[in-house]
Length: 265
Image (cartoon, rainbow, N blue to C red; front, side, top):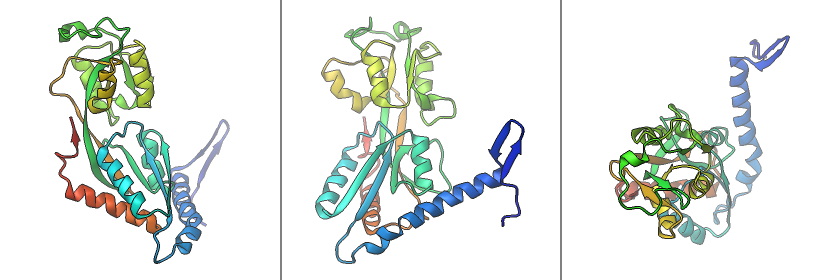
């Protein structure tokens, strides 16, 4: 027994105590490890096999990662994959609890449990869609952006990983309360394209839509906020051969490629 009270049961309240939260989190990690034992034991020594579960945030557009994935798939054809899209906080939670092999996400600060490395760096700019009055104009001044409606990511809160993007919106004095909000880039993009407000997107991700005249970048276009996407793993995880090889390959790419080369302007 733990000799600690794990549940707080009172009239109108039923919740875990801090000790209960600790036991619950550790139990999830133990369950994750035990449930993977058959895969670990069945892996052959001569052929790299196994499953790689990748959890990532919705706005990961990185040619370096894609190139590694393509090469790895050719080198290890027996490996299988699953990719799930969720918000960055959930990505970190899944990696901590052994529910994902690796994660690609935003991080506001280092996580003491996880090994995190910058996968790539991107810059966020402000965009509007075809219905917006500023669309297609090359002479837009910052003063014309002031007071416009905005749409935003949920993680643009003061303590969120995209707080620098929030500061960009404040810098040009967009309306403080977003007209639309989403955790996913495709939905923020949808709201911008359909004229619901001006919103921030990674410049290199939005470029294709700019070329297709679905998006139009508005000021400022200099001193844009830089945001890092991290590659995270749980050092306490007992990895199968496929996971071990994949993590090693990504880490080698990061070590051999300068951050400048992995920066998308």
